[in-house]
Length: 247
Ligand code: FPP
Image (cartoon, rainbow, N blue to C red; front, side):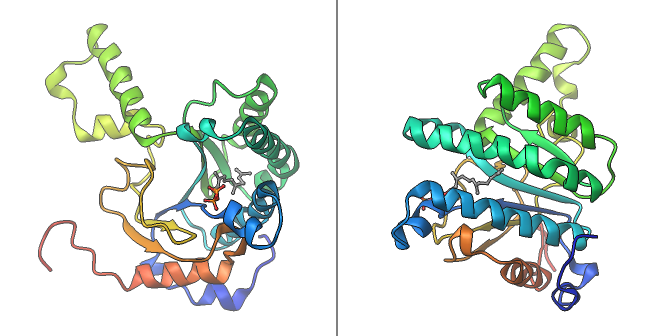
């Protein structure tokens, strides 16, 4: 077990834990600008936050944690920032994959990733292969990810099966569609956290978050702490989830 604050973990009622938490890690740039730093310093600080939140998720035995690292729209940022983020992802995997593996984390990447550099794609393949048999937290990194793009790719997969004669169109069910998504086999998102004040979903896990509870904070991602993560989990435990039915 990664070192952690036992008192903090005790605040969470295990029976009211979400199975799948997704996080929009927003506000790196604003955090840096507010300190007179360049935006990349915010992304570097954001990696530290991510490490701390993953540790907490491991210690709480969360089933799935999904983080939004790079959207299909993020390619529109200046080349220097895109390059910086790509190096940051590579460094992160190189430095952290062994420790993640020792903590029984199973890493997965959601999104396209084929436009990443061959070196980064190699690290992605290596880290996935290293952790493929692990049984702890399913840690999904959404990279070159868009929710609509994921849904279109899932539809294409199913269409190919129909074309091959393996599947009849009327047999396409919600379950089959869910399985064809990048998160296939994982539970739907129970809790979606967004940092840094904006109140939108930004094309993240559109299908999986159909019944998610939302939790927003003004704290920018680099300043987000395990304490605040636990605040979100405790708040989730108090929500009355009806899934469209009556109490
Ligand atoms: C949003 O902040 C953040 C991103 C687009 C990148 C997220 C990346 C990290 C947190 C780095 C760590 C990730 C991994 C997987 C190692 P923003 O740049 O949009 O901030 P702003 O809205 O204040 O400009």
